Image (cartoon, rainbow, N blue to C red; front, side, top):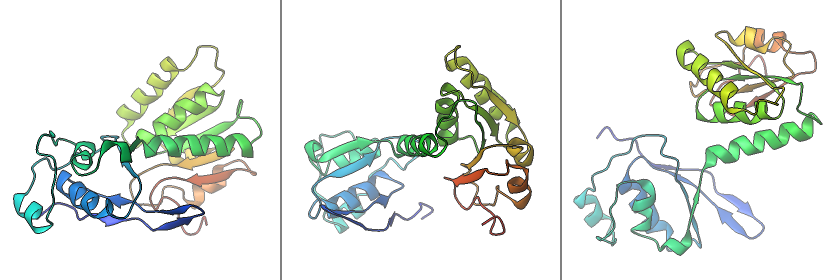
Length: 227
């Protein structure tokens, strides 16, 4: 079977309990996870951002094997609907983790830099998270230099941000096809690529402002020699 296997994230202990995540790639995987979790947890947070395709069909053999009892009245066409067929809606919380990441980075930068307006920040990797963060920063008066390997998409995203942001905002989004050039004299370099390859190289770190720093919200984006 070519379908990716589900996996759990680390269990984190909090003052009031514990939290753990499960990454799934199909509705049936979500149903299996929900069927197990409902016996142990008070609430279930479900990522409702439909950012990847999922397998739609429900495997009857797996349903029987895991003894899953679900509401046949529910139309199961998403991860959320799959979880809702197992767990009552009042125990489910919908959320968008990508937006939590964007808000967390913005809040950190606001505190770290004292003020955002007039700062130069490079974002290497302009997918969902990078683009949302770029808009939020440009609206705050930041000059955002965005790098994406696909220049057509990169330039389109930059144009969209400059159209969407308030006209009174002094911030501006620009595009660069080079990570080194994008990072030149920047106060901050944010890596947000999903390529599992180092994008923040030694040359990138050397092109930054002397007092600049790197935030990595991608996957394996920072070269070991930079660390």
